[in-house]
Image (cartoon, rainbow, N blue to C red; front, side):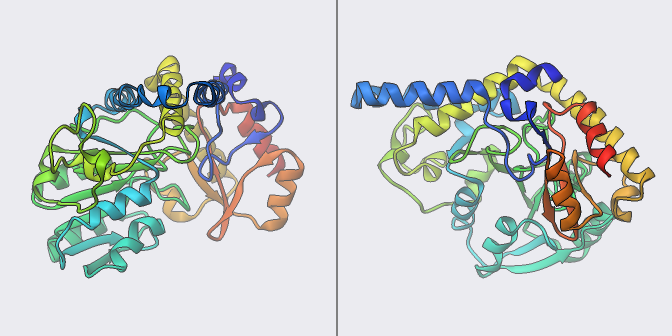
Amino acid sequence: MSGYKKYFPLTKQYVYLNTPASGLLSAPVLDYRQEHDLDFFIQGSILKDKQGAILNSIREKVGELFSCAPNRVALVPNFSYGFNTLLDGISTPKKVLLLKQDYPSVNWPFISRDFNITYVQIDAKLEEHIEAAFAKAQPDIFAFSVVQWINGIKIDLAFLKQLKTKYPDTLFFADGTQYLGSESFDFDTSGLDVIGASSYKWLNAGYGNGIYLFKESVAQKVAPRTTGFNSLQGKYKPHEGNFIGRFEPGHQDTLNYGSLGVAIDLINEIGIETIDTHIKQLASKAKKAFIERDLLEKSIVSRKEHSSIFNIKGDQSLIDLLYEKGIICMARGEGIRIGFHYFNTEEDLEALLDVL
């Protein structure tokens, strides 16, 4: 996959392992953004006439990539905006199951509202804890990140599907910000009712754009109150009260959402299956090397499946050394968080290991 570094000039100068914090902007996305603003500069409102077609094409690209009909795809500025809109459509109180120390944008919106919350500990036996909590609490809603932001623990999607079959009335809300774009994912056959994500990380689409995918049944259980003139406009929002329209009340930015469309074009050019295989192979080699060097917490070591995000032992002095050697990463939790994307290579891993 080293050939794809050409799309991300920074990777020619640095070993970039900081996708969990911010994905890189690719050359094709930059070209689109420059051309788009030039078009706006020259055309003014003429460009706006194409807005509907542009946004519809992006919904279709998102739906095709993640196996979801485009009329169930909402384009939002970021995960948090969409999630708060979603929760405002739920009558409280409801019993909610959350993961302790999950990403704040998942947990805080529930905490700030009148929900009855139960927590599950994130560790090596995460799925066992979740199953026990379901049996005891019978939650109305289970909300979680597919991949944990601090240490990269990934929840077992096959387990979630089985759990959903056992508890069909529970709504499963997922944050896919640290997940979507890193491997193949079929939303319609998953156990999830909703998944949302900001697109600036693993989708490499820049800031200001995100996506939400919904199962058809969600509109019967959730009634968001957000609305505006744009809620009724467009191919997929022709009727008053349209569910997707509640997440898109105002004018949509074709610069940012168009960037997402171009980013998906690059993913399709490479092939999501190719990306999936490469990332998993690189992550597996990294995990083995980190275990040999005693750099991982026990909860990660004992899990069979893991994401490409790791939190390795180290302090600020090690981060400074890594930066000095041209390796970009970040302090998170009690260690150093790194992540391998499709533009990363075995040479990048070796460069990291040489410093460690």
